Image (cartoon, rainbow, N blue to C red; front, side, top):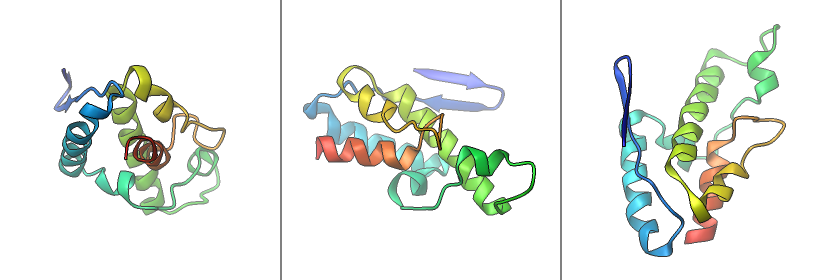
Length: 116
């Protein structure tokens, strides 16, 4: 499925949570993440500001940290759109009071722990 928003398009490879599909989905997802500039969010333990830190009226995080927050949003949104059925709870479970829209690294780790 391809979606277009202004000049951005997103290719979503859907993963239904079957072990047989995991390897291919993971490979395609990491390739796409590399192209989109979000691979590091999925694969590295970076310090992502919380929602409260990002939205604070008094600056509490650097511009670089804010950029990581925005990349996390993009990465989590992609993961959330690309899983269904049995895989969905592993991504959805990475939402918390600190990251209401989800923590992409946590979602990725949960998927890898389950399927590897």
